[in-house]
Image (tube, rainbow, N blue to C red; front, top):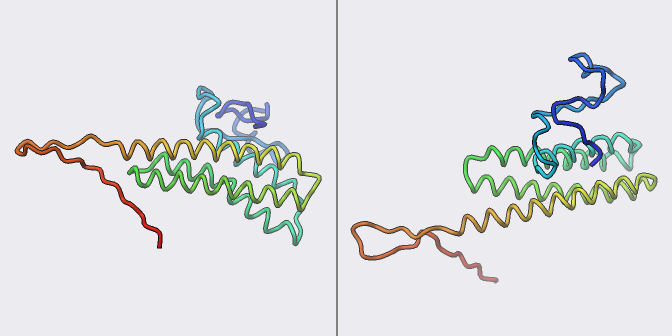
Length: 178
């Protein structure tokens, strides 16, 4: 992505609290210091959302692009929001649901980036760059989702003290096609 600065440092060099409110200079607010590695998915999804917003500002607003812009910004920024929600999940089931939603939103972002490139051909190369980032995020989320699902299915058998039997606490649900 285009942003390489630390998470708590604003992009401009004016410094101080007033630099955030300057109208002509964009500052990016980060929640934590730059000690996290570049592969951190939380930071990656946040930067992706910021890049989507910056890209959407470049798309000329018109009857054709208005809906595309709204959908793109909604999907692109909700990837990070849903990832944060997954991080705060209180159960494995809720976590998996939120990660699944992140993956869907990343895929939806890819779709609307493609539509934006079709509507505004001069932004095609930038849309393609963001499309590739959305693809990478979706793949990482899919891997994370599959790994968590495998972890959920691996359970130790329960041993009841007053019984000679060992019962497994996991079971398999089989779906039949109609």
